[in-house]
Image (tube, rainbow, N blue to C red; front, top):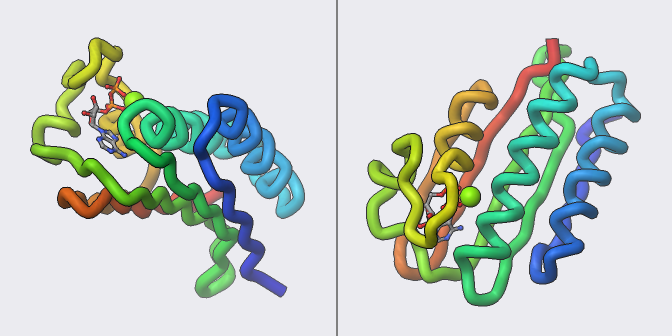
Length: 134
Ligand SMILES: Nc1ncnc2c1ncn2[C@@H]1O[C@H](COP(=O)(O)OP(=O)(O)O)[C@@H](O)[C@H]1O
Ligand SMILES: [Mg+2]
């Protein structure tokens, strides 16, 4: 029956709200708990904000419902084509921001999701994270 996948281009500010709404709808449709849903929507929001604020061209957020071995989860990916993150180590520190932001986005996503991977170069940034909906 699964996977269910949605992808959203993030280019304009209202796309961030759309990403939040689509994530919520997708997770409700498969019966995720309100707590899980709220945490994942927060993460999608932070990743989408980062595409809007920190890239030239925006990017894409993709979300997939996964169920390996019958365990329900949601995989979120964020892709963009640059400018990339100079130091991923710094970017994952609480309070680090290159544009006067709060610097809580990426470290928050890492904490809230169960798996978190990030690759970044001048060619772009790719973030993949998974939350298991228990
Ligand atoms: N997709 C991205 N492309 C380039 N830089 C990014 C991206 N996402 C995050 N960053 C960098 O990582 C830093 C930390 O991100 P974050 O924790 O969300 O804090 P904030 O957005 O408040 O600055 C940002 O200030 C920015 O320099
Ligand atoms: Mg941010």
